[in-house]
Amino acid sequence: MNHASSKLMVRPGKKVDLARIDPGDTHGMHKQACAEHLAKNIERLSLLQYLLYAEGRRSLLVVLQGIDAGGKDGTIKHVMSGLNPQGVRVTPFKVPEGAEKRHDYLWRVHNAVPEWGQIGIFNRSHYEDVLVVRVHRLVPKEVWSQRYRQINDFEQMLSESGVRIVKFLLYISKEEQAKRFRLRLREKTKNWKFSPADLKEREYWDSYIDAYNDMLRQCSTPHAPWYVIPANHKWFRNLAVSKILVETLQDMKLEYPKPAADLSKIRFE
Image (tube, rainbow, N blue to C red; front, top):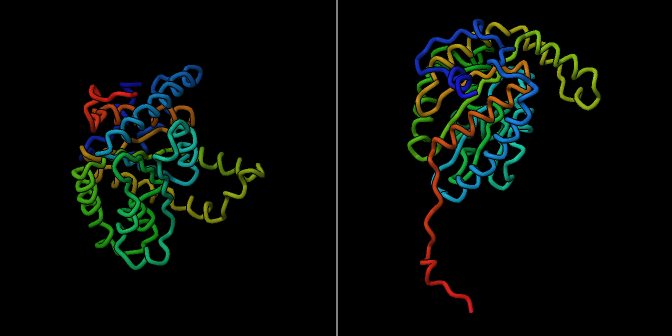
């Protein structure tokens, strides 16, 4: 999986063509061996989260993007299952409302950035403003085309302020999306999630792929890399994301703070 996680990263400035990536690729991994590896990663994430909280000087921001039914909710449910809820905040970004519409597009995003010692998870994110806004022409090209630079500057500032950023594009095929939509329609526990608007969005599939390609090329940076996760197989999606999160936190070289007092002088009567 080490080799696979490296291959999943989008190198800064590299041209990306999602059409050349197989969303069903499992990079040589097999489902039978997945459960044990995933369990170990979840356990390791729990320990690293505690260390992040104890250190209290940095935070981790996890960005999840993907087309409808790509598996953002499922990733949060399964990969983050071992985390302490007190140290995690999940923020879903839907259509801006109220005060959000009366500020710049990054205002609500900055407000949701995790404080030091915490893990923040974005279910969709500020990248909607170079994706759906672009595809549906909600603002002119001269507006959204500037946002790649603005987002890079924003993430650079966060990085320099102690926020580690890791971004995942959960990539499924159009056929897999249709399969998941049909499942939603059949199951009473899931059909509440289906909206006719989901079918309308499928008409823009190619436009979204073009927008994703540009997003990945322009906004994968050393301080905030993008990873393209083949997500047709949910088990591989969960394994890949969990492994990359473990590697990211380990790379931060987190340390426990020194005790506030000289413990050698503490005595109990």
